[in-house]
Image 1 (cartoon, rainbow, N blue to C red):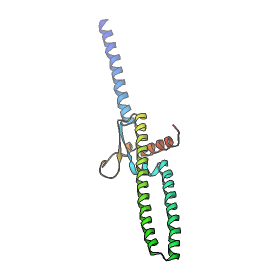
Image 2 (cartoon, helix red, strand yellow):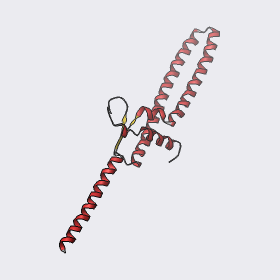
Image 3 (cartoon, one colour):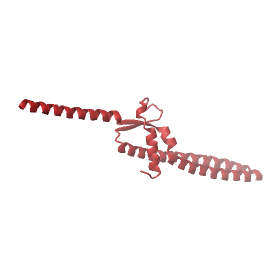
Image 4 (cartoon, rainbow, N blue to C red):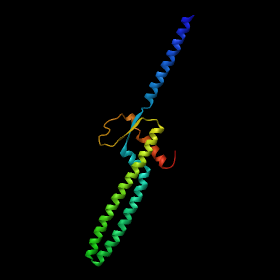
Length: 162
């Protein structure tokens, strides 16, 4: 009698053990705990980027209008000093535009990084690598590429959706 209870206990524990192991294996097969994104695709597809690009283009257009009107004025007056001043103003505008572009790029990456951090936490990833073509990630299985999912997530977050 004692032998059959012991045997039943061993069988039940074995079945439970196999079930636990099967669950852990299936869980790891279904979703890896590490993934990667292609940085350039995130940057290019991020909705916040187009908004800042529009602002930058507006600044560039305003600068162009100022320079065009100054050029016409200086050309009509044949003012050499004015043309020199126009050249300096043009260089200043170009420098300002480059600084603004760099500042916008930093803002975009700061926002993308914050959203990717949230995505990783919400989807229980250990790590999400960024592939940027500089050698930091030379190879990864396509199955762990979550670029499209992350891009969809960050754009929804940017648009105020959860």
